[in-house]
Length: 543
Image (cartoon, rainbow, N blue to C red; front, side):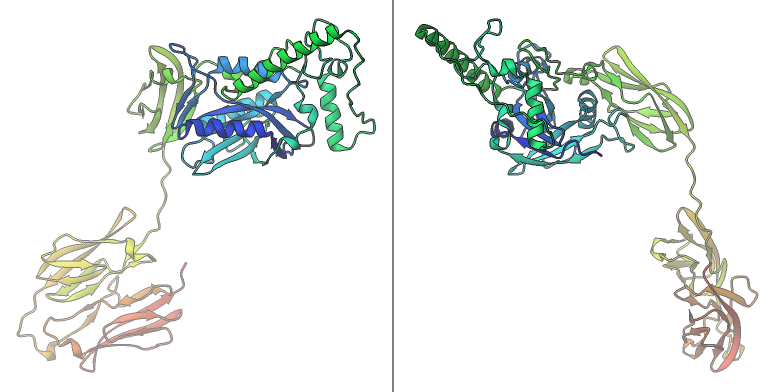
């Protein structure tokens, strides 16, 4: 971003015109364009701000003031802008535009980006202001850079730079405020007739602009101050009276035109440099383009969507827009231009306004890349429980266990809640844990024990993942419930667990293991002080 625009200075008249136009149509949108001068030192002077003109019945070129939509009368704006611009001794040029946004939006829409980009290309950079009332009036001004790449950055938006605003006619050089043909009794009211000593006949507008630039920069060694010359005396009182009458008429006309400017609209402009009959082209060639489709081709992945838009269309044309897809099985498009990709292949999206084909977009749908998920495993794939017993399953390696969905295929045999299994009756059931669309299953067998089993015959076994008497967990695991196989008639208060090496892992009396350090220890289960079984447990570091 360069420093071609550092500050924007508004005349009191121009700033007040924007406020009046905004409040006049509140809360609907409105706007206008900014006329003035820009200097090489980065100072931009806004002399005139012209509102949107008027509407005529049964005409396509009309003003629309709506919430969320605005369109000017471009024909009248061009005429009025030429008229106003050429009233000044140093003709005004287009600086940029402003418009009101609904709500509290201080960012440009996609349509705004397109307009700003076109004008920046046509006029070698512009300023663009956003006005809002929420509830107080405010204006945010941005410089839009002409970067030579259709006005857009790599992000798809024009290059913007917020610049400061100052308001005050006294801040603007006097030469920029002088009107043509209104320079005292010697004014050249008729450009076809030679008059006595006209300053602005001797000093061309371009020379005036250069002189002002030299005054502000204080860099020119050949600075020449432009001063008014004393008009020669006129002895003929009749001629003096005649000139005074002409001046009064011209001043009256100028005042009427200035008043009209407060109720008119200024659009995109390219002012002529000098001369009474300067022809001003306010609209770039881009502004007069025919309707077209926003994209010629797009590539989407299966399941993705994309929105096409119709460019350079009027409000009436928008009402007749229709979108169609040549292959709905590949990609569909709705009435708003939104494409949805369904399967691999190619399709064409067409844009029609009424019966007329405006453009096509080639859509290529490619395969969506699959994300490879970690391969987790259950702490056990098989379990045996007695009736009215409990067991614990964990999905090893999962940090956020709240995302796991647990399920039992037969809740009358066994239920599961957050990995805790409660057996109900004898039978077989599958307990599953689902994470990220993948299911992990454990086969659970529930047995019915007989009352004749005595304490002397009690045998309590520790089950591991592979029934080898060994197991392993990660150091980062929060804990591990030792799976056991025990008769239903045992007194659980007599069951105890212990760890041979508590520096490696500890275990509670209920069988909950907590890893402490990397290594191996033996987990022992006892009943009434008698060792029943053991598990060789290995604590490993997280991979």
